[in-house]
Image (cartoon, rainbow, N blue to C red; front, side):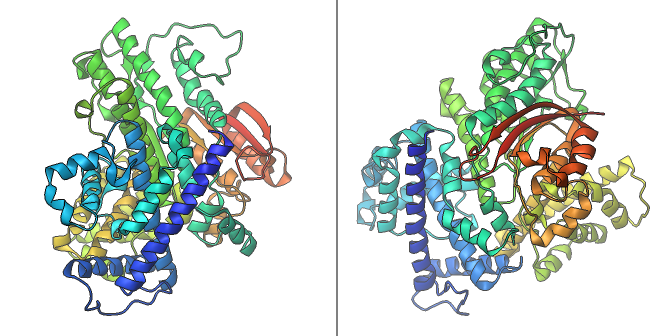
Length: 624
């Protein structure tokens, strides 16, 4: 995507954010008596309808939940305002992208004159009496239908969905998105990623850096490091990690050597016959700072080819010739026994990729939201290109994109939730919340998996540092009970709206704990760089003594920890880590001490959009 097109996207994104925040600010203050300075009147105004009173009650609960994490009253309102505007903008962006993929009828491209809306009103002629002729109801109907599968953005029960733009704002927003210069962008998978990056004002980033050299909180850390990775860098790193691993697995007999234009193959490498082949359902790729999932979108393409080659391999050899020894607990049946025929298998590949292969973590919940949507859209495009009708497409599960959100902190809700738990489960839950402290700043850098066995033993009344296999068996059982209890607690009939938010954050924390206990074959990333966040500087220095001088080196060390032996990590970072004295321990003990450098490309200045950093892209292979 060229610079001029990105400029159009940036202007449209900023314009959309401006009008939505203005409209939602007016609603918060003028309708719901929630002032931007954080002041909230104790009682709902008499001017509110019964429905508006319910909405206000939920808004107040949302602000209280945000304040429980340490935000000031004013910051909580501002935080909610941004989230609401971001969610509203991205919903209509998503509808434009769905239109471009023929996944929904025309619903936004002509506003209230869209063909889909005309058909809708023809079925319900009474809607002409409504102020907007039922257009909001129509859009909400579409959101509800899509939300059955993609809850991450389209679920109208989400806290960021409590406000809806007034009719004039909605028409302005649709006009912005329907600008002629944007016509070509809606069919591009990466458009949603650029909108995510451009939602933040560049001036805001400059103000943050001027105020403090180091990030002061998780939001500053996220905003300071939102730099889109160029497509060629993404391909270079994924080709030489995932692509190379499959090339080796196939003994060089793979179409990926032609598809992966940046895959480095030595002239003397000759094809080698293989007796066993890795089952692609056991391959796992992680982006620990995933942003809008740019790496994952390209990896999706490679995984698709990998699955196709695995099917052909099994047909040519014998049923069960695919190796699942790296993940025996998965208990996969051979592909030829899982699917009736090749057509059924090909139809299921997009679902398999999202549910088995691609993992992502981000400290910005908005990024996780966008990453999940981007992968879902990529799957839909794959089905569209294969001419598989929407009704015949498999439903995609939750996937493995996790937001590193703050653990719930309301003491009264913790007490209410744990009151009905077994005492040992209650103790384990309390200790788990303590373990997840600092999660919004640390994300995947928090070494949860190292502390988990100790917590389990203490909750069971056992002590000592000896790890036992039954410790993890106990955790799996306890986690299942906690998930069930939290899901029940989230039900409106059993808790307050704030209780639902409490349960959601706790469940997301459990998801991250599960992810950190995985071992991956590939880690690819464009990690944050620079000074450590002030609130977690000491804990990071203690956990990563060889890498503590910069976030980039810490992320690389953590990525290596999460790899299988023989796994590969690909990263684009500042090139200074390869020659500055301050990185000497990292180079000696981590890079050369635990890995073998495979590929290094010195890219120079101006690679990562606005980041004025001399960059390098490199691939390291983990050694025994």
